[in-house]
Length: 377
Image (cartoon, rainbow, N blue to C red; front, side):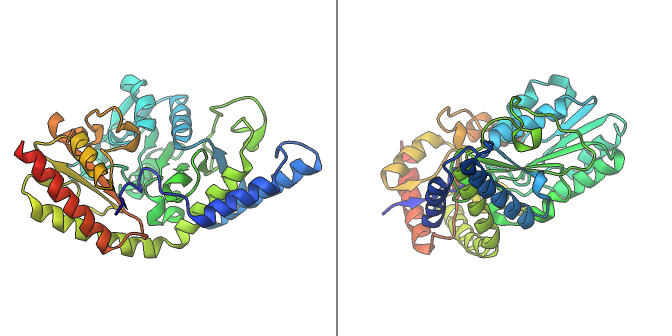
């Protein structure tokens, strides 16, 4: 038996999305920037997908931009913030695609406080913002954390920032929030929202930026041609964009069922983990979370757990999937106050509506066997 509990890394493409991609490949032989008939046909498909995304997420068609993925998109957001004078407020639990460019800005960035349960500590965070109302340049805050699943107070902090400085730039990594739904409600409070279709069963290699054009000047990250309304140079892959939007809209449409199923699976797995051993801690269990479980196995190393789970057909990850190969301590857990060794023992399980109770029970049996062996060493 195999149980895939790493949907927060890449959710396998559905047959429907694969078919959509293949159909788009066959139908769009031209470059969408070309003036001939084949190019016009490709452009039509691209703009149709752009319009569908705009309608679903409550933005205008020219506020939907296609990129190569969330890393490019968040690098772009940080670049926009860096080009503006003033202080950038950000959370220290952002995905590495935001953290790495932010760290290069040095003392221009003020890191907002995080509670031990993994959510922005609102009272001191608001005090920090109010202390510098004239110098607030930007706020960078993710919709939900990609390691713990904890949903962040985007609306509360964004509304305060906009009251203090209406021209401030607010960017949000909405990638982990997308399967949970509510993107349209969140983007109302955000100038620059980032989505990644491959997290919801779409193809790898395409990203979607929801850009609210309300007085915040946006400069391109990639320059060259005039694609994407002169804001992002480079030929857009029409099949990737078409299939990516299809996956995002499917996830939005099915988000209620996804939430119901994943909550049930999450509760089942976490009850089992807590009953298994007192050395296991569920990070952020007291907060509202999307469909993932971050478990700390004190005294063990995540890489050992994952290796043995893999042998039994249970696939999970250590913190952020893109950092798993490096096996560095999770910067997210370190920001929450966990010791280095504890951060190295974090295993992330993430769910999909295609799983059932039998899958969770199989995974629990495997975790029980694996951790029993490792703790006896």
